[in-house]
Image (cartoon, rainbow over all chains, first blue to last red; front, top):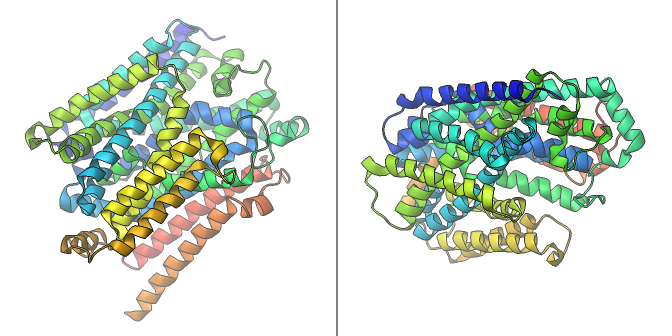
Length: 493
Length: 75
């Protein structure tokens, strides 16, 4: 086992570097909410590439991805499948939303949708769901960071302290630099994640089995069910094609509409930058391949890990590896956690103030003090997430799945807002609520599903059905709606 | 300019068809019928794994071509 002090030294060096990189751009944005939340809409292709890629791939990619491959085999490929499809809507929706953002000053998704339908209730509902979804997601990132530090230091830094150290660094650079701090640290973290994933993903199969092909040949002989799509369900039985396919499709539909990801459309310098970000995204997401290879390495590894998502750190701690390599892995896993966590805390705070407090509840927010309020909200969201991570005893994954079910229901609302003149605001809101309720119910009580499909598929069908029913009742669209859609289409500057 | 318009339409229809084909190939029935075997191994990967990687690479190529076509047509 590697020396904990050497591993810790590498981790501390990485955290110090993240802090420097995160604080450095602090003075470059204007002292306004637009500067803090959207970087004055100035981000170029390099930052957009890393800010979207690194935001999408969280601690789950480094721990959960290999864990799925290890325990559920080919079922993990669904993550690759929905990633291929999921970012394509961004290519079309992103520039439309960005044009609206430039014209009307939008900085968040809910703000744009609520303005289109002239609905405070919509702003409040989307803000509440966003914050409720982002807090457990952020708590999982904090737990992931704490777990990694606890494991590689063999308990010298317990989970709670590890999470506090790592997210203390995140808090400082997000408070100081806003989205520019998130962007530049994501560039550093993205490069680290990709480099380490490819390095470890090719090194471990070679070291343990003599190569990738030999590893899979041995798994095919001893555990062939793991390599046969659609893989295994959580209980170890064969997963059904219905659940696999709808998991791919529902996740792909919801992918682009996560609030912390979607609002990055308002940070891009121009439409071409947004489109090229989507074009280049597959080069980022392909790093799931080495992460799955790492998970498959664990299938024949002795001793087996206690939990599937421990497979990567477990193997590293049981192999005679140099401390530098283990330290770098640790830095990579922390990078994955931080690069998602920083975007989440930043987004949740902006949404809470702009959509929930100002638009939803109608509180008067002075533009001069808005940035200060958002910064306070950053502290509050981080504190709440840390407390959830440390104190909450229930299943965070279940909480997250429930929240994700509701987030997926944003997709029809956003698409209707951007493309459909006759969409009716109340029908959109009713569809979103009905879809979320159906998804939550079927996630909690899967035995109520008429067919074994992903719960979100039922929710989306209900959501779209309610939305379409509302169409018949829609009056002639207001003049502002026509103008809104012409701006979105680029026909009105 | 009717010619440019029809070119744009053809470009968009082809891309939409590609996305639909990709979605069918990554789920049932395309993946189940065509891509879900373990063998042959491709670059050391089981076929069902390589199938997903292949669609990732193909989607990258499709997006590059689509973006290039948009730029060439001045969109």
